[in-house]
Image 1 (cartoon, rainbow, N blue to C red):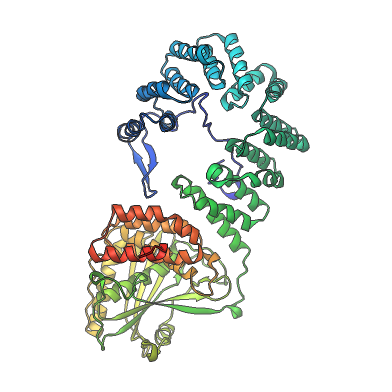
Image 2 (cartoon, rainbow, N blue to C red):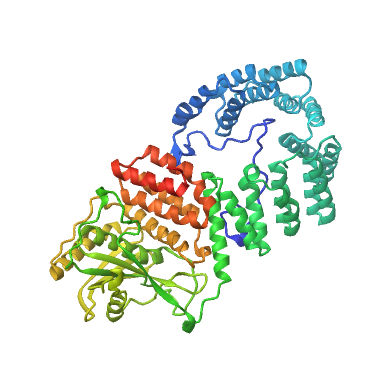
Amino acid sequence: MSFFKKLSNFVFGEPPPSEKTDNPAPPTAVEGEPIKAFDKLGREVSIPRNEWLDSVLLSNIKDAWDKPEELASLLQNGFADGFFAEVEDAADQLHEIDSIPARGTTLLSIVYLQTDRTEKAEQLLQAYLDEHGPDGSVLTNLAKAQDDLGRKEESLATLRRGLEVDPNQDNGLAWYEAICREAHGDKGSIEALEWIAEKDGSWRAQLWLARHALEARERDKAINWYERAMVAAPRPIPTDLLMQMSGDLGNHAHIMELLDLCAPHFEVELHGMAIGNNLIKGYLDTGQIDEASAILQQLQLQQRPDWREGLSYWENELANLRHSTTDAPAPDELRLSLLNIEGPLWYKGDLPDTVKLPAKSDDAPTLVILGSSFQSPAASEEVEVRLSDSAGRMTRAIPLFLGEILHLGSEATARTLIPWILNSPGGFALSGQPTSNEDAAAQGRQFANPEDGLEPADYAIVCNLLASGENWTLDLRLVRTIDAACLAEHSYDFAEAAFHRIAGPLLEDLGNDLEQETGFRLDQPEWVMDDDELDHYLLRLEQALAVCCSAMDGSDHSFLSNPAEIIDGLIFLSAQNPESPPCRFLLVRALRALSKTRRELADSFRRKIDELESEFPLPGDVAKTIADELAEIWGDES
């Protein structure tokens, strides 16, 4: 099973496909399927095979034509995607220039074997042996050619010669073991592996012998084989050694042995997700949440987009485990406060002229926007600790969005109030009942402090979400705070993740209500989105709020889940809306907050953000403001 399954069903990973060249790994993309890749910002892209071949693979091969190391790597990548005949010229070139002749010969022979020119492959491989002498991968591929030509006994003898020269060829060893198992069962398999294990430098056969011991429930014997493998293996320890050892130990429930043998040798840049995955699983199985989190954070710093889905899985598992061990406070012990956010979350008073606020007149009203409540058939009446879900996020995102529009699009001052739990570890409070008119009026007036420039709010806008599956309803009320009178009510039906379909009518109704009551007009800022990117914006807006809250004085930032995915998401939002100052400013605000709590993680995004700024620059003074703020975050000298 893959690591995207439920944790209780997780199976420790099997060895990854070989990175050696003794036999090619099966293609990862079949004929006709597009190639999956990632752009410079880490976004997944799907490229038609012909386009990938011409524009990416062959173009890169051209650039690496006289660079053997790069050329060999590109050929192996091409093989993995099922390209053989298409890269034959490059394989010919590598054969001519490779500083490691066995590699160039082996890769060219693979092209011949995969394009039904077995006799030519045999001639090529034999010519290498005649000139240079024995090499394990060359002999194994020669054995493959002989086998394809029907010369079974000769092929087996050649394969044995190859394993004598290099006993750690993964595909060669697996092939020989399968032959012996088919002929003589488990006894034949063990005898074959013991024969290979006697060779100088052998360590891979010991792993397979340990697997036999584990299957026979001989733990001590298996540990002995693993220790022998570790002594014989090169340093740093090969990834596939740790992968097979950790996988087999984990799947046989020897978790402490897995951690004791593997964790001391883990090097994140070399072993990456393949080993980190099993270590995280092992630590979680033994209740070592902090150790699992430390491995996860090391992996996140590598900024590997192909790991993103797996890392998000573990982030969610860690969050679930933390919440499962956090007791909800008793109702009489629950301590709440209100976060008071004036204007847009991303607003700072020194924004450039192109995004300055409209002038605020002395007689313009002050508005507060309240949400953080939703009703659902499955809602509990008890105080409980839970992870944020889409409905909960929307109860905060919609008020933040309305506060932004009202503050930027009118003379009114708008403040969004977000309930915050003071009990450790902190977090957003969510009510199962809508805020009453009386409570809304009281909350709107409680922030009055003329010395700090905070006037009592004149009006409160109350949002309440009703969620029934994917069918949602937003109820909206305009309340006058001086007497708690409800001046207007509206209700809007929309599908989950489709708020953009009601945003226009909602803002029009709200603008009319406010104009009729106050005489002030609401004009939407020009950069407000009117398609499904608005829903994307709302998601990232609420997530940016969470990152900012995690950096508040006195906050326990452990409540924040998956900050790496949040910053990635804000980068993607900015790239998809390249002319939107709010998207870019929101990214900068979240990044600044993250730098206060997870400095290394924030810094790991620098390359992506530099790429974003280069490829999608904002115009004029906005670009300069963003650049200055980023320089301040990175600590660059002016």
